[in-house]
Image 1 (cartoon, helix red, strand yellow):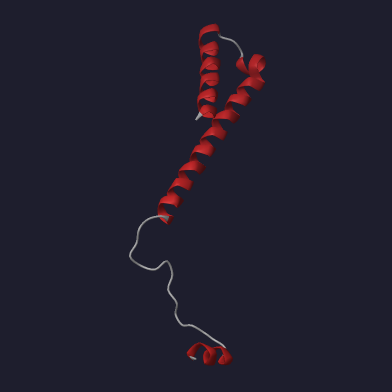
Image 2 (cartoon, helix red, strand yellow):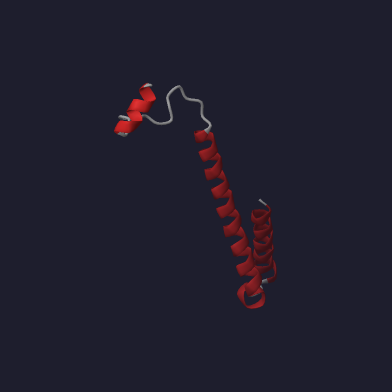
Length: 86
C-alpha cells in the first residue's frame, strides 16, 4: 500500500506541475516519472499477489465434510498382505 500511495502522490505532483506550470515533465522529471510508474505497478502487483494468497488460504482452510482426496484402490505387495493380516 505504501508503494501505491508513493507512486500516486509522485504522479499527482507531476500532473499538477504539468497542468499548472506547463512544464515538459518528461524532459525535466523523466526518471522521477518512470520511478513513480514502477512504484505504482509494483504496488498493484504486490496487492494482487496478496489477494490471491488470501484466496488460497481461505480455500485451503475451508471446512468441508468430505475427504481431501479419495482412493480408487489400494495396491500392496504379496508379502505385505500376509504381515498386515497377522
